[in-house]
Length: 61
Image (cartoon, rainbow, N blue to C red; front, side):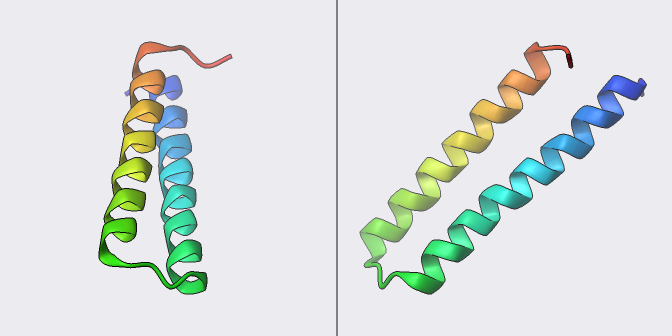
């Protein structure tokens, strides 16, 4: 694994952890129904997908 790949992996772990923290924040502070909860999970997972795709298709600057 190249150094760039290693750095990307670490960055992805950090970003994904932060996205999970967003969900935790919302879950603990808002009284959401099941539909809203599922929508938030879906959108945050979509965000993770986009971040992953960008990281695989782009070089670090």
